[in-house]
Image (cartoon, rainbow, N blue to C red):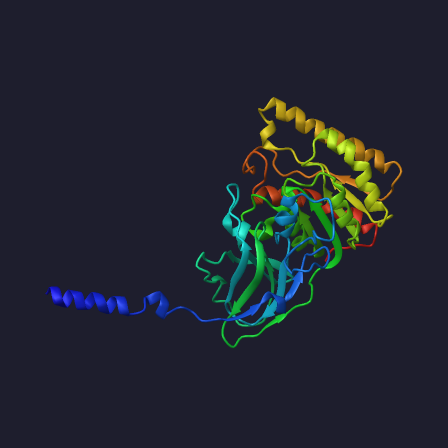
Length: 361
C-alpha cells in the first residue's frame, strides 16, 4: 500500500499540472511595432514622457522616477483576434497604498463599439513574468483597440498577445487636435482603479480629442523646468491643473514667470487653467481648510489678472467630490470622482476650444 502510494505521488509530480497542460498559447508583438499615443514630444526611450537630460532644473526624484513613468501613454492597434493578452518588461513596478496595482502597474484596454470607446478588460502580468488575459471569447471581426499603459510604473517594453494566426496591426491615432494637460497627482490619476481612468484620459475618450497628459504627482508647482518642457511642446491648447500642489505664496511667486516662459513660444495658444478641487480633508481640519482656501484665492487672483491683458487665457472650475462619497484618501478622487471632474469641465472646455475651431468628434 505504501509502495503504491509512493508511485502515485511520483507520477503526480512528474506530470504537468492541468494549468500547464491547458496553458493557452498566443502570438505576441512588441509595442514598438504598434502606434504609441499620448506623448508630449519624442524622447530617447519610447515609454518615457520627458527627456530629463535635455532639460535642467529637475530634482533627482523627477529625473530618475517621476518623469519616467508611463502615465497617459497608450498603444492603438487593430486585431481580429477573439482574445487579447498583455505582458510587460518593467524597469520599475510601482505599488501604491492609495490605489490599485492594476492602475499603478497594469494595462487598461478599450475597444471601439458603435463609435464609442468601451471598457474591455484590465489587469497586470504576474510577478513571475506571466502574461495576463485582458479579454477573451470575443465575437469574430476586426476590433479597434486602445491600450493604456501603467500610471506609476516604468516600462521597458509592452507585449500584446493575440490568438495564434490572428492579425494585429498598428492603427492610426484615432484622436485629433493636440490638447496638452499638465498638473498634479490628480492629472496623473493617483487613486484611480485603472490606468485609463485619470480624468484627462476619460476626457480623451469622451471627446475624441488628442490628449497628451503630463501628470507629475506632487510636483506641478509652476516651476521653470516644466514650463520649458511645455513651451517646447506643440499644442492646439493647454489645460493646466496648476494650483493643486503649490501653496498660495508659491502661486503668486511663480505664476508670472511660468506664463512668460510659455507665452514666449505660444503667444496666442489658448491656456485653460483649472481651479484646484475641493478636498474632503477640509471638512473638519480647520488649518487645512484655511490653507486650501488661500490657494484657491491666490489661483483666482493670478489668473483673473492675467486675463485682463491676455484674451486667450481662461479658468474653469472642476468638481470631483462634493459630499465625501468619492474621496479615496482625504485628497484624491475615486474613479467616480474623476468621472465627475471630467464631466464638470468637459463642456466648458469644449465651448472654449470651439472659439478656435477645435471641435470634438
